[in-house]
Image (tube, rainbow, N blue to C red; front, side):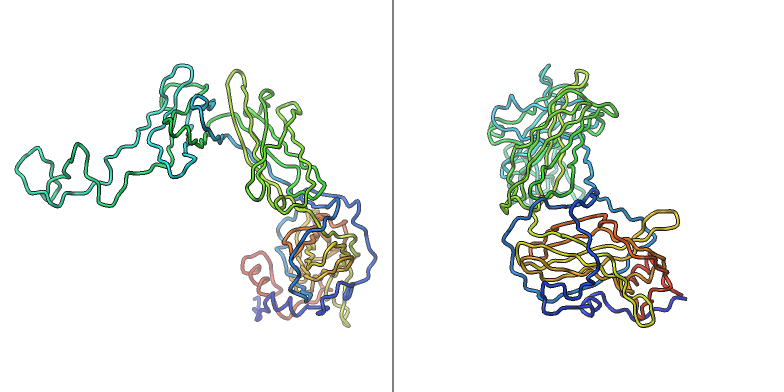
Length: 487
């Protein structure tokens, strides 16, 4: 039976592992192991490698102490060093229309289950009437009911009982609400209902084609936003960026694909816009066809202006026809743009630290840092092991936070025995997913998923000192069945 020992909190472990309290950027506490340069490192999806460092204004570091901590991971789970950008696929269309109501056109290629959601651009305006009209025949396609004023009524408390059978009564014998001027009386204090969106469907016989959204002239002048959902359509658009995040000097690639089920759509046009972190929208994406339904846009990134730093929204729009059926689609994805002011120049070979009894107390890795400004950084990394079937699994993660002055410094990442002993697995252990993060700026500066394929020497599980106290974080893993404690 597993004995539960009073756990030491992760925070306490971090502070207990403090080194170099003066916060110097020198290599104090480093292992001085042989270095492997990061230049030319093999990359995997999700890596972030700056082409050039850019000096940016960041808050002055307030924390001066070096803090270290490590924790166990769930060893039975699979580990992947790849973190690719995921494609987004959609059947939908979002359009803003304003001005000439004759131009309020949308393409409906599969009306079964389709919904057209209309919003006024001015949220203070109601949408009293809106309809879908077949451009070819002029026929109204929806059965939407326009807004009525006969709402929010209240019983007339001054009505007197009557024997007139034409007056409807409720269950208590009280007359029904009195009609005043042909309209039902409103409850005091209620204003006419403001309808800020309307949902329409194609309720008449219609196969496909162009449809006009019909709204009052005043609403057309102020503009409407239209969302078209066609879940039964076979036509889709997919967009994906080449990387999750981009650095200064990169050229981002945005890929789009048009498909009719499994068949590429070769016709049509594709364009797009980007939305900057401050929500400014720029129509700067110019797509070129790569054939076979694929399109690509290239976006150079070369500004350190703060308004460009952060997450960019990417909206890709396509229109055209497929086998004579008109279609229009759009899809949204995103990417990050983060100019780096620091990077990892080299990693030291992993060093195994043993006590006087030759049991292993820690595995440490040095990271040499170059920075253009004083900043507090954290180095984060993962140790993994290879199972008997050849698959890679997570073992432990570690993080060190340290001040590094402008120039060069070294940060040491330490995986202690409490983090690596609990899984009870043999090494060698592999270093993976090394990240340098600016704590002053809150941004990743450098990430290498393979971490130069560094690994420890061979290790037997019995060589690792078993902790006297199980950390709370590890106890949670044990309680969830993700980690087995020694019996």
